[in-house]
Image (cartoon, rainbow, N blue to C red; front, side):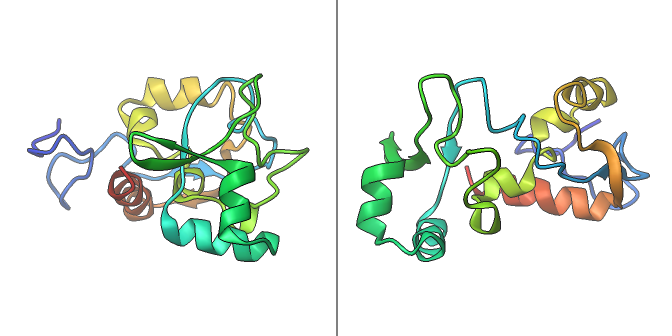
Length: 150
């Protein structure tokens, strides 16, 4: 289904239409399921660090000291021992300036490979199947944003 050399799941109009060609419904319910439980990495870039420190009204150095770590030269948010994101406390403390990785969820390549994978993600994400119908163009813009953050 994918003729892209880079392996991206982004399709040219009229060629290899993705299974979600008619769009997908999603609206964040702010339940925190994607922010809690399993250990993981939430990448945050320098612009997002700047925006988040301003949003929290703390210096970038203080943000780095309290909330960030470096993994293989990249910046990530810390997490608690139980896997919860450090920015989650009955909701995202930085929702307005959350990292691109969070903004593009659940429209990640891993969730969009097949309809079955999308439906599997829907078992833990209350927003899948609800709210706004996102067009294939909107979904693929999220995919491009996700891939540019790697």
